Picture 1 (cartoon, rainbow, N blue to C red):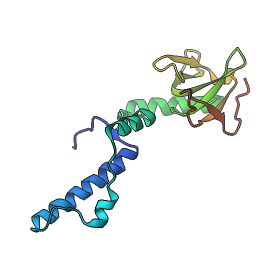
Picture 2: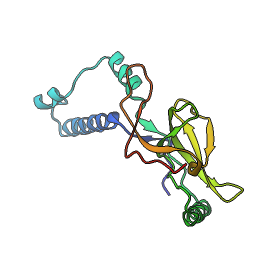
Picture 3: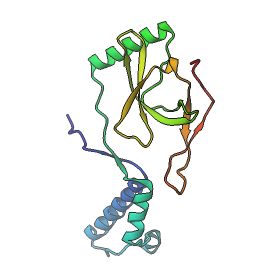
Length: 176
């Protein structure tokens, strides 16, 4: 069995790193063949010198180019999740997939952007969703979405002030 990676690389840096590895592989091949180690003229034109400050500014803007891997769902957890989902479906409860970005209408009449972090069966048999509100990472709240007014949302580009803006997709709302 192959070892589990500590993180999974993603984003624009992955393509740049892959291109760098390809150039290095070609350079080693030229060197092994006894040729020059200098890149061909057209290859040299593809390389762009960038200052470290520009690289760091790009990382700060877009975030790191890696993500921690998610743990694989075990058979027992999967069966329990499917059982809970089927029970909720038969009872007509709202089921929203984990990771879905939503907006929940608060008491102040404002839509609060959030992400569904999980779901489980409550003591009374109703389905409750674990919600993590944007800007409040690490703080989970439990909602019965059947009793709330909510809608699916899609993230919009981040404005200059650094706040996250969400916009309604289809205007889906629960009956609550």
